[in-house]
Length: 313
Image (cartoon, rainbow, N blue to C red; front, side, top):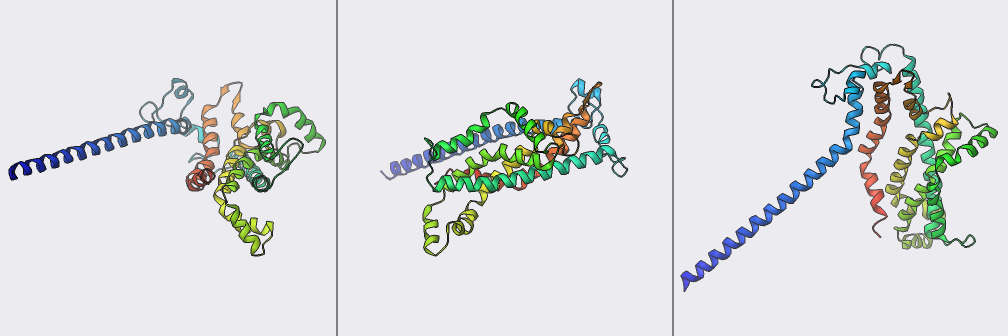
């Protein structure tokens, strides 16, 4: 009887051990599959950046042949960076192209940061009002007004080309920083309002009610209580606006000529009667996206928090 009991216990231990090994194998298998899929997705996402970087070191023949691996398919040369005056043998010499690049870079930075900051400021006020107060404009209520703002993104920019061109000529805003700042603010404002409305809607109203009891006004509660809580969402909206305005090409090409041109216009100008200067375009493109890459890396936590904050209420 005792032997049979011991055999039963041994069988149970063996079954538990087998089950545990099977569970671990399944866990590791699922992990391997997940990481392989993520690795493939990362390669797909990073390949355009890799192609851009390697193209800056290619000649025309290497580009046309589709050579991809340096020192294997081709010998790298500083052709793209030399055309910008940024190669090791030209970086310390005077270069008109490099000076023009730096001017365009400053224009892009000034216009993008200013437009994004203004859009976040105005969009936060509008979003807070839509999330806390009930408005009525004809047949439109809060949800209709919010959708109206978002629906402005449906309109193609080319439809607005002629009206804005005539308006800016009358207001003497052509080829000015303030002109691009205003139109960029209008272009990203609907996105900021939509993001921030969800952020503010996810904050309990009891916090403001407690602040009112303590003697704070609506503005005081908004500045001291609501804004610090919504800071991740504000950062996410600002970064998204910055990316969109930094990469905007259509209005920059339409409304500027020499003084306020931005980097996307300079990148697109690398074409001529001899064809496309791929190495110069690649070098310009990589230099233009570098700030956005650093912003994405160092402010990733704010982007994730901001995008996820409005989903949990």
